[in-house]
Image 1: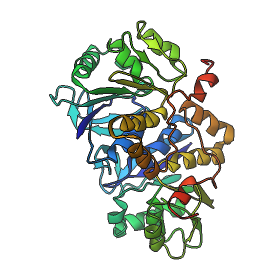
Image 2 (image 1 turned 90 degrees about the vertical axis):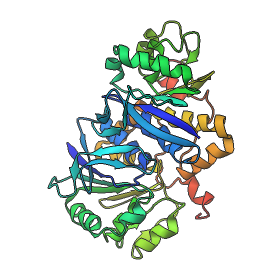
Image 3 (image 1 turned 180 degrees about the horizontal axis):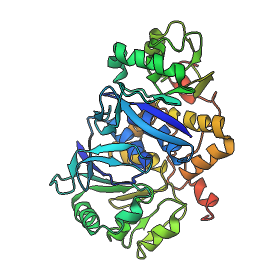
Image 4 (image 1 turned 135 degrees about the horizontal axis):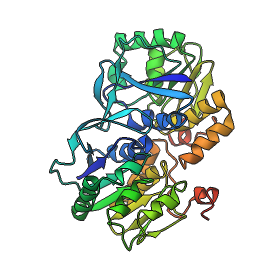
Length: 202
Length: 202
């Protein structure tokens, strides 16, 4: 049983969080999920709707999997020393650290992706790259795995990465079962990224 | 500008709600979003994580679009006269009523789909059909449009339907733009449903 701590902050992108959490959450014997934020309580997404964080960053819970979404709010959070320190400290003890979309900018700024391969949203690629000059940014990838770090492309790519993470931990047949249950066509090829070309990155 | 009222209840399916809300929410000049529940406050999803309902069913807000998700919680809500009455009353004045997954069981039980074509989750198809014997259930469809009612297949199909709804209201090019922004491969053919065959329905 692995415990997932999913970070939320004002302006987080709804699908970045809840697409992957749908997938992990269906395997209730394998994963438990928690939302956490700078303060516990309701947190407004980029779309305005609010999710409810059960715990704050000060809570001492250890997570097996750290999950960091993107969204317009990352432009503000990139300046939060408290948040970046938390990411740096917690990703050291986590078995896996996952990010979706511009969430990888937060990981990069926290320094945890230095000398590693990573990807991000294709529409915000250059801004994210600036946050981590020592990261080997991959312009064309649905998601990238490098050691304990899995980083996905924009928004909906998080679902494909989550299923990839399930496959990594429990086998591809389990990931397939989850995708069928969700009636989701899983893009299981990490390298297949039609959106890189649309944004002039391939 | 259309106002969307998205219903949540204990055991709602995360992606049923937040996949479509991601899509609509990106068009912030065209749609405003609100979560509502039997009581305002935090509501636990089927995956355990909580969303925060700003309003209760008693609130008198009129919605242009009524949105009803599915999830394991529908098995309980199907017995809630208060909820079903609310759906019946509010869908009369709404311009569109949308459901995802087993959310169509709630619409059916409320009587609003009688003599209309509708679809639902393919894994729960027979249970949903029992909730609306006068509905013309379509076993193979990604989503179905019949007048003001749009009903989708399971979980991730809600995103394809939401983009279909955007296309209906604002044109296909706008829906395409949203899907590219989300790096989402939109399945725009309503009739394309590979999951019906997997569940022996086609």
